[in-house]
Image (cartoon, rainbow, N blue to C red):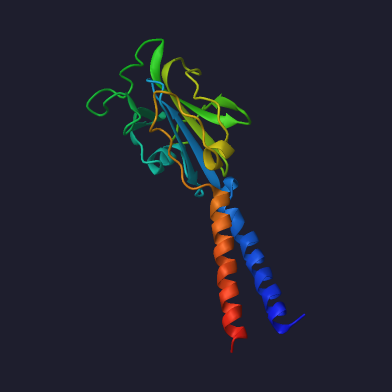
Length: 207
């Protein structure tokens, strides 16, 4: 093998080592998903970077949703969630009572869910007290419910939220919000790295 070939082999090897170390930070396991179903049937979906200690309430804020939360000794209650061009449901807190539509059964409120495997599980913790884990998917749905029940968001997976195009309901043509798929970023980074290495080796070989 020539000197140029050895340099190429070493540089390409270093590139793949770097990609293997960087990949976990870009993987779905270091992201969290969010699904919000409004009363009009529109669905907001998103995939976001995970940060240690983040809560369900912080995920709503990170998604850029207009949310109002009432904090009390019993925890936190989400009064309103709104997304521009998608939907808005809830009570106009603090000008109105946070649970203005949940005074008598059946309550009409934002039910909070956590994805457990392939099924939604009703959260027994409020959004401010629920600490997310890497790969978590939070769900919210507006509608009638009770103490431990409520309307469920549509079924979805983290993989669909982060890497695939999830079909929207007819009522929500603008509801989809997600960044570039992870594998696109990895591919572009790999190609850019290889082109840069090729240029460096070529310049050195020409000397």
